[in-house]
Length: 167
Image (cartoon, rainbow, N blue to C red):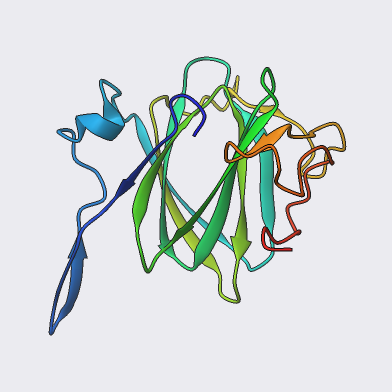
């Protein structure tokens, strides 16, 4: 993983009524460290929709939790040209810590809408948003490694959100 990206599996407690899962605790120092959550947001994304790329340059960190459906989260380090790809689902919930200085985004994968809950360490400033954007299909975003592997067949080519990793 790129430095600062953390994945924390959550525990699901099931019984005949359904299940219960903790999605954020301030004593989870292994993922939240000293970060303080400033805002929580809910995003519903239809199958196949890509919400990328953006980054935050004022120190914001995001925490993603897929509640329903599945998402492919990607982070790209422009300096090292490394890309990390994480699949997160509502069936196997996890908290993904995303340092905002990486270009990041996600795609709803599968055949149902994805419901994403995410926490941020900074409040959204409507008058002066902390978001730099680039197109989801920017041809200049060319990874030298994907998930630490330089031999991935997608390396050295413009990033294609729609190319499955197994082909």
